Length: 64
Image (tube, rainbow, N blue to C red; front, side, top):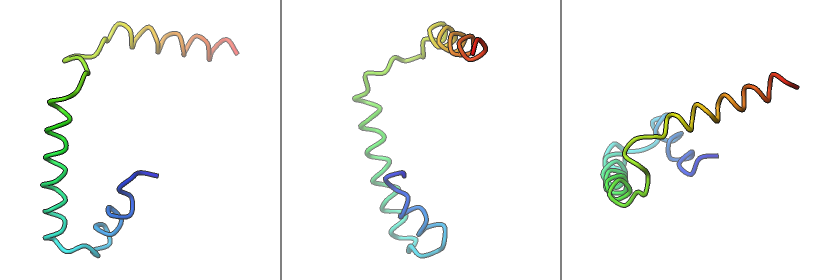
């Protein structure tokens, strides 16, 4: 399950006041900005490595 499942379901079913949704949204924006600043992820993905991995998986699957 996702860590926010209950909160998202409450929003979906109209059980959460709009003010609470906006507060949560602001909190998440702060967390996302911090995560973006502190990430060790590269600017771009290594597409060649991803393609090699996917091809390897596909080949292994076909050889079963």
